[in-house]
Length: 140
Image (cartoon, rainbow, N blue to C red; front, side, top):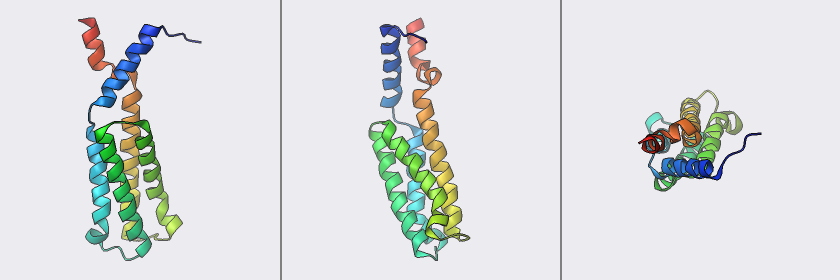
């Protein structure tokens, strides 16, 4: 087992807080994905009501979570966006709008939201990424 000294744990926590404190461009991208989902029924003329309602509700939820992430990063909001992204991928089969334009939009945006949210979680907890600014200041 690996043991950590209290100093290394506090510096790791400080680096994590540093990453969590700054606004992320990835939240802006997921915010744009949410806005696209809200507008998609009108842009692509979704024929099925289930696809339209799902797109609008999930789009608003993704936008709200992205704005929460811009205000203050938290793991829970990223994990909720991952869940929404997975839902968007599965929704065409679960709600019955397979082989429609709503299906293609739902799957594509679901993949993008899931990827961006997992990437943001990975970057927030990656010690190499989190420590770039802090490590340079410690060396000096």
